[in-house]
Length: 379
Image 1 (tube, rainbow, N blue to C red):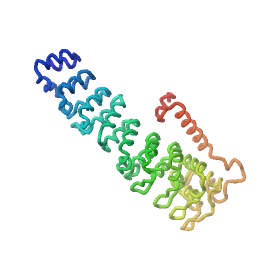
Image 2 (tube, helix red, strand yellow):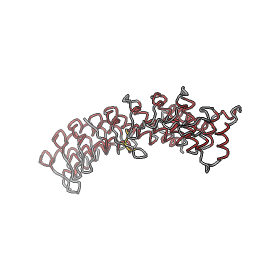
Image 3 (cartoon, rainbow, N blue to C red):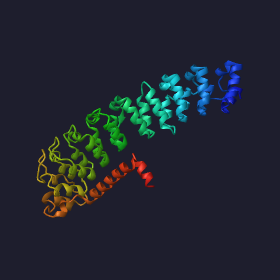
Image 4 (cartoon, rainbow, N blue to C red):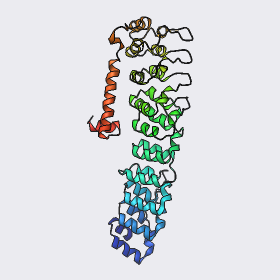
């Protein structure tokens, strides 16, 4: 091993300085191994802060050097997560934030893999630009804290139709968050003041439409709090959020919206074919709880006919489970005089209680993600 690298590995500053004073060209040396690191790479990789400061003062140009993998010293410092070394390197070469190695990764990519989110924060705050690939990497790495900082500095990234949701539609990041059921990311995006809730993907669906299709009540609560007007948006086929919930048999989402939204207009909305939410629920063979809820609450007229002249009962497939019971309800109602039949379905009520308990617990304990909550509860 070259003496200069032996001194760096031992973090022996006096020995290092003695070698450099005797022969300044030692600073230009590269290691003999396959990585071909400079002395600055090596010092940064091993977290030797004093040596890093000494080297950049002696030869600042080493901040821009590359090893055999295309990594700059900042890449290695970011991966290590050493905040002090990252700060030093940024002070001498902030432009290297956007440098890409042979794997097309920037220091931010590597910082998101480190144990220190502060190192990633420093890179984001110093850089002039962040690419969609870096944002996506931060998201996939679970670095929600860094994602928030990236979007705060570069909010335009959230409007890019660069994410694919289920079904293949090109969508914005908010659509993507709703599709994944990512409550943290949804909350961040709704707080950006970019009107992301109004954006439509290539299928003409809003982020809330996607959330309803996936049935996440937690995310619906977030929209109700931060973007309540988005519930009034219709799909290209004039379907309301209630049509979408019924189409996907998302009883919990349906009941939550029915009990939370102040207006009955959306519940009475018909689609382009004149179908009420009951037509959709019947045609999709939704479970008995949802159909019973719609009929029992007298939300729509069970005898209402769509543009083809069919009532909801006409659209109920004969092979449907509990056909006789459901067809009876759809023809005659569900004995709506009984208090029991006007109650919220038990499954939906229990789900609502669980969701409210989870949100209260997360707020009270300052736990920010559902996964963290599960870990805290040892589930």
